[in-house]
Length: 84
Image 1: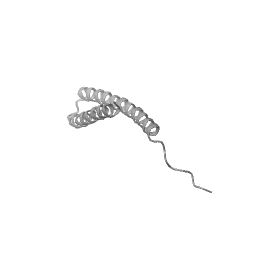
Image 2: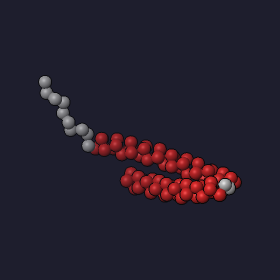
Image 3: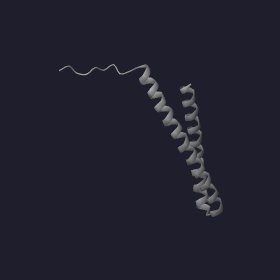
Image 4: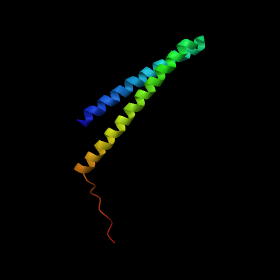
């Protein structure tokens, strides 16, 4: 079911965004402490999060296109052309 899949994707996106925000806060503290080794680790984690978010966004867009096609099939446009 498309709505269940959409909910699943959005839930994962929310979790990843929250986690990315937490990493950003952690990165700020690491920058202040000038711990380059830990900063490198956090930057890799951020890249992993961003890649996962991008992959989910692609899935979401494909799903939305699919939903739009189904809706168009089931409920074709009822607008008529203007009479001349």
